[in-house]
Image (cartoon, rainbow, N blue to C red; front, side):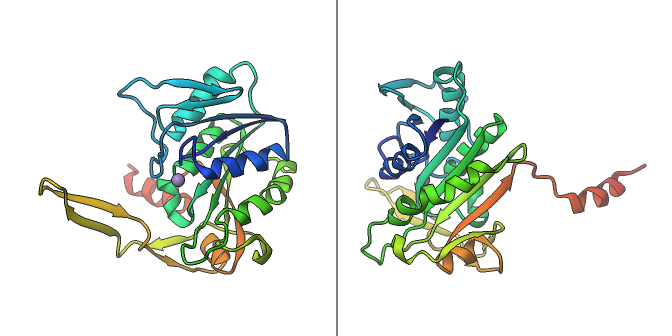
Length: 253
Ligand code: MN
């Protein structure tokens, strides 16, 4: 099994080291193609207005001066063109990718790009708790292979991917694994910080930490809050079926 790893925290991120450990437990044919710099919040963006460089750092290890989507696309079109991967893993992200926050996520979007290419793709994220002093990636490191193995036996439907989040607990205190829906957050209070730069000019800085999450039953957010690993199948087909007929009727004749 050939595995391509990527992330949005950049090629030097500690979560990528954890992902490499997880992947090597599954195969020794592991390749890395990841952004040279952090790209958190890049979503599914593709770099169009400037050239992108691919740098070979080591055997089977490449950095890309672009987004997570650039990295997957370039990896598949260049480095692995003649030897397509069987699996794409993205992460392990430093922080949650839960609820509708995933639309901002470079980590999840890299897996979306893999799904578009028809390759089994899984995004992995470690929810952080800055209050505790346990090693932050402990749950992902210890549970990663356990979560992935059943997912490798399963056929993924076309244009689908799987989003995995590990709870902010030491591995020994993880309650188990739940397969759940994507939840949603309360958008009423976004966090935009206003300040002045050293030259006295106003700036704004987005902080996602203050977003309130709605813990609906059967969602990824609830599972994480209960101490479970959340496994959520996602689809790229975004059509809202229930509105289709309503709108068709509205525009008919
Ligand atoms: Mn990130």
